[in-house]
Image 1 (spheres, rainbow, N blue to C red):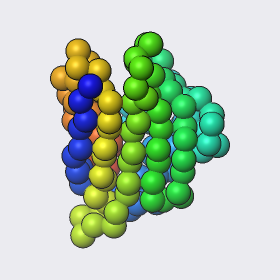
Image 2 (image 1 turned 180 degrees about the vertical axis):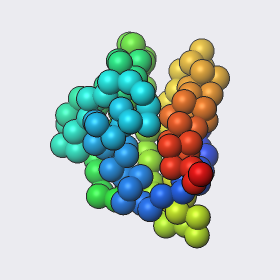
Image 3 (image 1 turned 90 degrees about the vertical axis):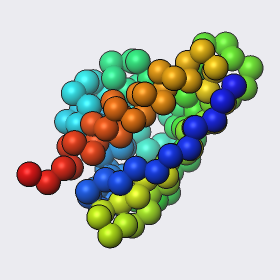
Length: 127
C-alpha cells in the first residue's frame, strides 16, 4: 500500500471548487462523464461512469471532502481527503490519498494529475 499527497492550484474560489467537486451536473461539465454524488455522509458516489466508486465520509462546506475509495477486497481502507485553501490565484487544493494498492499506484497518481485535477484546472483556466 502506498500514500500520495500533492497540492494543486485551481483558478477559482474555494466555494466554486467545492461545488465543482460535489454537484453531479457540475462534475459532468468538467469531467465529461456521468457522475453520482451527494454531500450526505454515508452516501455512495460514482465518477467517470463508474470508474471511481466509493463512499462519502465527511464534508465541511467549501473546505473539505473525505471519501473512501473502493479497490476490490483490499484489507485496508483507501481514504481520499481533499482540503481547499484560499490562494492568491484562486484555491490551493491539498490532496491526500492513503492506502492505494501498489499495483494501482501509478495509474491513480496519473489519474489525479491529468484526469481529475488536470481536467478541473483546464475547466477554470482563464482564456
